[in-house]
Length: 262
Ligand SMILES: [Zn+2]
Image (cartoon, rainbow, N blue to C red; front, side, top):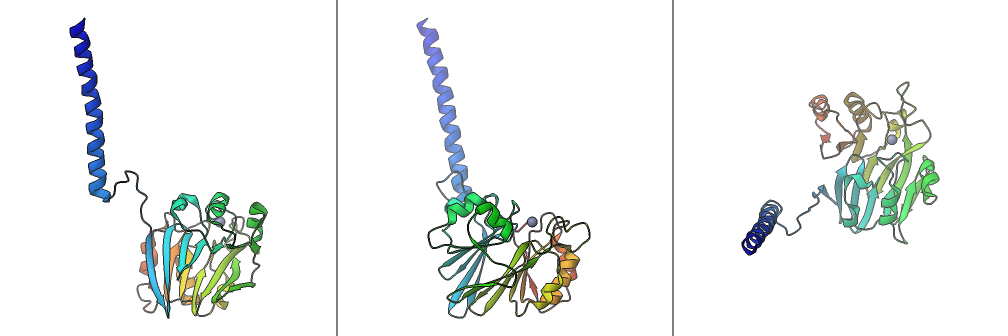
């Protein structure tokens, strides 16, 4: 009996040391690969940095249409959605822009998480109907604070049969002017005639996935109209970004930057 019990305890302690050993191995592997004590690590987002005169601009690419812009110490979250980053690790917003109410652009819980008493929230009407708060910016209207200006512009489908996704008159794109730098956040749109009126755009975010937004050919046409200095195709899902690069190979004065914005 005694011998049997001893054998049993030996067996148990062997299992325990196996479990502890397994954890140590996992810890060492995670430490070697991630260089940190946290076993669960969020992937760091890609970021581009620009110098705008005296100030700096950092653009964080969280995925799809979800971005963060840091204009010096002003934090601007664009279409913040939990699927694309861990917002508990993100700074609260001075300004939030939401283009429209679709689930890959609007996340009510994240808006709450990022909001502080001084946060400005610029949205379209269908987003207001869900949030019941915020400043509805109609097309052509502008919002301004210090050297930051935001203008709402139209975003909609033009291909027959696709206007059910984004009908004309409902959703927003935005033109942000930060000091003298102008950034076009197109929202979910095709290459609409209103793009002809966009002037002096330095950086453009253009959506590229059918059937909801543009084909690479439409993005190419939009680039030729807008003539930005830098283009980020975004909201591109499974679309092959190489098709756009192929179309752009003879366009010398526009830089196409591909980031993790599927
Ligand atoms: Zn949409």
